[in-house]
Image (cartoon, rainbow, N blue to C red):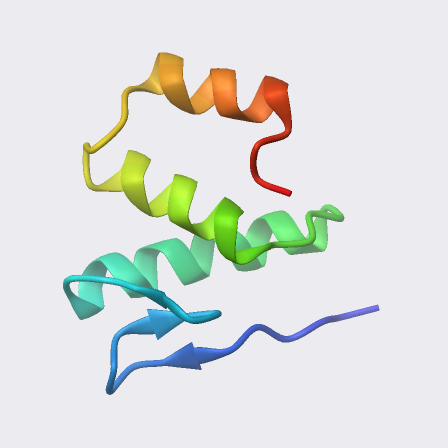
Length: 73
């Protein structure tokens, strides 16, 4: 079963989460799409965490800690 996610390239949002540039939004959307084929169900909080990791706002260790805590739900 395929679920779609809301991508707004004009306002630079992905499921309502704001991105600073189109390239980062598209990279994140492509990664999410791949993960969704494996069963991942994205949430806005999860997208914020991924965005913050991709842009260097959080470290890999922090990213892993969020995943272990299931903070993305």
